[in-house]
Length: 506
Image (cartoon, rainbow, N blue to C red; front, top):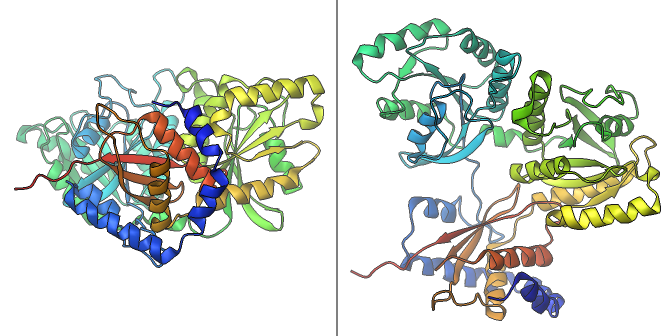
């Protein structure tokens, strides 16, 4: 097939005319065309998840399908109690890694799950490291992160081992939270072991639910209770709407994150030291910048790799991940006096995986000479080409130079992060794009895009229903054209594909 570059070159010749044609389309006409495409999907085999995406809460006055925020259920507990096995049992497939050794799961992983027709988000937690010092604190910290971002919590305990000091450490944190907690007594494989579950009443979290994640025993009753406790729509997501926009300042140690926060706030609020890694806990600060209020989070610098970290650095990385997850936009700070390294790229990847809006801040710009500036541009072209859509701001956190440019960059990124494309315009865009630049034949067949909808914002997420698998190069081409025609400056966009076959006639 034609390469990405060939498609891009062909499109570039008529890009402005194409974009103008899409934007000038009559909304009513575009919506009618999209509605016809939507009805044509009835000839294809669709599952319940497809129907949920397509229905959402219906098409609004702008021709946009909106989806309610799914409730979030976090699974927490000390290592090797069977959290991932329980997650696999709930989602009905073996996705979470399971081994009979503690600490296999190192990060929070999100899955979509369904029970009795209700969909929810399931979060499998980990983060435990065999070598890390202060393990009780680290495990509880990981649990706290998950709890803060969830509507309800499954606290998993090994019924045959009983309540340990680590379990009790996590329980103290759970009692301080306002989230409903369901106590799961795992590894109760038969009636003989049920008294072991009853002993967990001593934790003070109410009735223990005896289950065997390995064999599925008791899991259905547990999920019935989960459905009783979980809200229909995530209360956590609702809380995120309104108030000062949340900005996470991230970057490797000693690039000037704390200096940036201090200069923005106009006073010394965070300890600044030439010793890398001075900041351990994130510091939330309300800051007035550019005539509006922002909530800034100064995060501990991320070390090279989580599994190599010890003690306080391990703890700091968990807090950093939490700060990004709770933020709406992340400012990744680079020290321009040093080459862009693997750590810098990994931090950008972490922000992309979190789905947050992104701004790149190049600090210590006043210390740059011409030779280093030339090298930096080459490094940006090579290492940050995949985020060329992110706003760039050249600043000096120490002197405050060009700090005011941060505000329009943040506003642009957040506006894009919140952007919805009307379903009519989206389908008109894809129809005309496919007509002018059709997908090449694959095995004698040509995959077609049947219908598309924007399932959600934050970040903008699109679902394409297709007759066949779209080649990665063509999907990238579609994604770049979405950016050129509709903007999306400063936000990742996700394009998901659902290949569906025509329903066989009976």
